[in-house]
Length: 283
Length: 215
Ligand SMILES: [Cu+2]
Image (cartoon, rainbow over all chains, first blue to last red; front, side):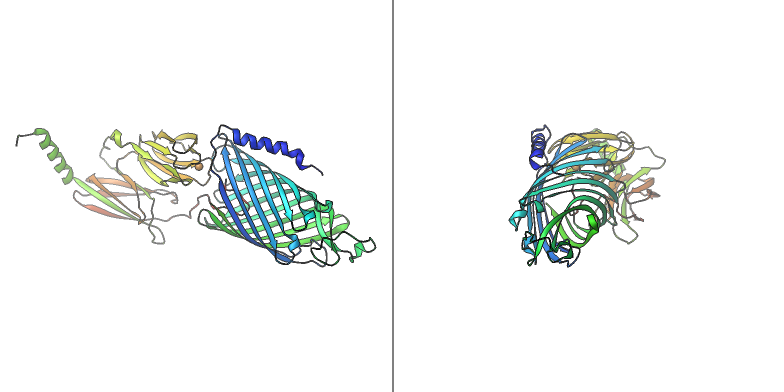
């Protein structure tokens, strides 16, 4: 898959122009910040000699929602996020993004089905300059509240990155189904299962049996020694489970467990177990 | 001092009213013995006619402020014009799908006020189509004696003609309305303790979820 960002720019510009020029009254900008910690037991995405690390995550965004009519809402979101790894700082990534969204609500009230379409363009900055580049993400989500406690969501998204070096570039398409259940007004549990296909970035050693005799590879130095990045096309299965505690109306603390299993041709399978803790505040 | 028949009549009426008037103080608690605020209470006279409404009193307000409705529960008399002023600088889309009052106030912005006349008795839940967590409950009653309990679970109603009444209490967390008969005696205030079994609070959550959208 090779849909380039510049082909999607006219669509993004059109959405932005539509949102800013419409007759509807704009809602004010709503800022949101998220501070987190994450631990990944296999940051090399490797099948052997896995390395683990933990990172601090910071993200901030401002969103403006524009109510276009009874059934349609548009939104604009500008965001920045960064991930700072404790040991392997070469994995540090930051993003600056602009997202335009369109929501169709099929009926009145909280139980009406919602369809969200969004397009995000982002710039990625990496410690390894060849990993920096531009990308986009197109997503569709079908959401439905069944009761005040039960909420369901089906999402499809396509993400593309064009980095300075081909090995870091790639496209991934993902389908996911998720449910939220509010045990009490304060406690929420969320679960998601997902399936994705696309390019997988891993790091490997030249001394691994699969690569012996294949000659020297381009190394990025993130894991030192003879570790080098490579890419393969495969599928991902995974899911997450999260417990969220509301702290008033505008803040929440969440603890999540994320599982991912990626399979590439020739049955190269790697797994990630990710634990994360996040504090989110909406102003 | 010259004799004024109008003043005398007013004085006689006031005295008769005072002599024949009673009051009631409701104190509401739940199964944990905690105060129940925002409980809607009204009194229907038994065997006596309901006095006609003063048109000037048929007005009530349900504000939208800080992306919430205020008040959360309110009782109004049949025929009341309820105004829905938007005190936020964001738009709201107020609606009700209830049978006593089915209405929609589409997309009104800051400082805009729309009104709806409540011309049927019953429960009118009001929501906002933009902010799913916003909800208010309007109870339309055909009596002049109603109110909602304060933070300490108390409500005092005064100047009611002596006699028997049906006292009804309603709350969104009650499975069904709480009803009882009381008898008011002239010159006395009757204390009515109301013990309620409340269900868990089942309001839609407003707080953000990491990675999720608030809207
Ligand atoms: Cu609203």
